[in-house]
Image (cartoon, rainbow, N blue to C red; front, side, top):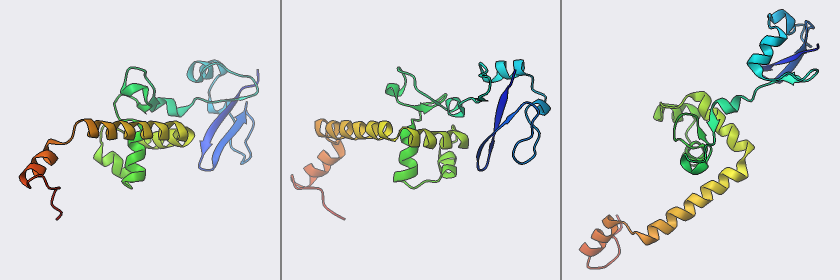
Length: 162
């Protein structure tokens, strides 16, 4: 049975086959001491002749209908992909800064959320737009008490500037 395995490199994905060297002369899968049955239990069903991969992003991002309104989020918490995107794009935070401000998530989670966003850009932007519309309508229905108090102190005038 021919089993192909791949590994990530800084320049992308490289596939190697049973005992054969890859393009750079590195040992193939058989020399990595992984038997086909071990790969099957570790990676899932084998497809002969095709590279065996496991999507890494599913280790970091999940969608659960009853959590966060079914929006994609970091596994094990309530930080949504769209939150990470907003922190990164709107606030200009680097992934390291996001992790330092939210230590409950790992750096890999931030990168996975950004990768998920780039793979599902329209979906995530749609969620963000829906949330903006909801926030605007809620502000209109329930004005801020602070604004009301400040407006009352100024004799009904608008809030003073400066």
